[in-house]
Length: 60
Picture: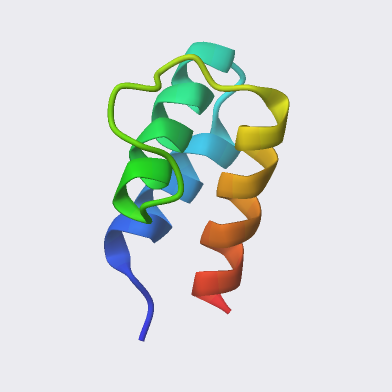
């Protein structure tokens, strides 16, 4: 069963051009999926990739 919150944040990430909006969605996903700790709002490229991969794997 798909996680609706993860679906929503991926949709927000994928449909926006603003890096700030994308990072906010990724931060929410990362903390929701327990990939990053709360409070790490400055994401590295490696964290962005890890969060996206984890979220998309969970949706499969």
